[in-house]
Amino acid sequence: MYAFVCLQTSVGKLEDLLEIHTSSRQIHKVAILSKTNPVPNDQHGNQRFCLTDSTEVIKTQEIVHLLHVLHDCHSGECRVVEKDSHRRMEQETVSSVQRFLKHNNSCSIYLVNKFRLGKVSDKVHFQ
Ligand SMILES: [Zn+2]
Image (tube, rainbow, N blue to C red; front, side, top):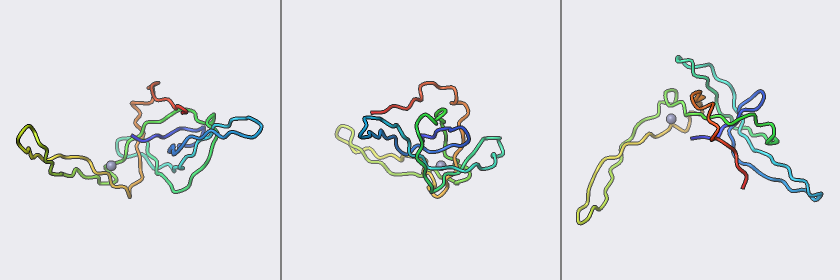
């Protein structure tokens, strides 16, 4: 899962949340975001965007809501890879093959998981 947020007119990937304490005892809550660019919808009508290398700092009040996204594994041609696993069970070593999805990190396109938009359990917490 990736932490993305919606602003009024854009979407960004949440990299960090900071509290800046000034000498006049003011506290500014800011978020560091990686910017995104919209990408045309896929053949299923899924809304997509592409992560860029540029970042921005915003006030956390500018965050409209959190956005649940998924990697666009179809565009990235991500593969299921197999890995041999050996573990001891009682006196025997048990071998098995584990399968897991290996994302293609050179593909920075993400899909909006529109089925999660209404979840109120996704909240931003400061420590
Ligand atoms: Zn993927």
